[in-house]
Image (cartoon, rainbow, N blue to C red; front, side, top):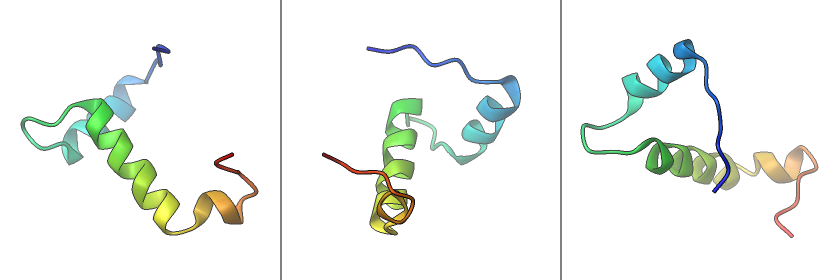
Length: 49
């Protein structure tokens, strides 16, 4: 699994949106799903292939 370094400020921002038992991976997965459902990846030229 890749390791990702986050700034303290970003961790604080993520913490403010996480539920008590939610992992960072769960939160980021949810955010990516929301981003994909809005079609942002497709609009910006990214592909899921």
